Length: 192
Image 1: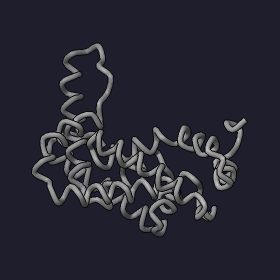
Image 2 (image 1 turned 180 degrees about the vertical axis):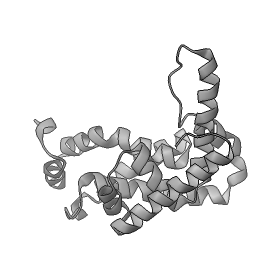
Image 3 (image 1 turned 30 degrees about the horizontal axis):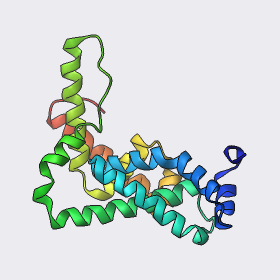
């Protein structure tokens, strides 16, 4: 049964043209990859496209997976590259996307509605402040903070995914959190 296999065993099977094994890899990682893409791109359509392109690229290049890093790190790296491609395309036509991006990014930090209506407005203000602060970070800081705080990846996993030294990852995460704290304090909200 494929569900009992490790990611690495599934890759070995997929290399030998077992499409069911690759399908199991997709099943295991599609939600995490989509969440990463959505966190970085803030648009559902773009996140779907980036996720789909991630798995297409992974399938095409499955034979080049060397096992130096985890399968999850390899997939995350491909996803980050797909997001960068989409962001470069956006720069060519940013005026078309401003309203759509705002509407889609409103969903990034949504929470279930709770019973206390007075707290709901305050909570929504905080969510919006965090969303704006994260989206205002430079890309290299935004990507690490999303991976660390929202994807709950370890520093080592982020290092492997982005192919950067562990010390750089730590520095970027701490810099991002410091900038977020500063931005949120300026908006008179103590969230972090």
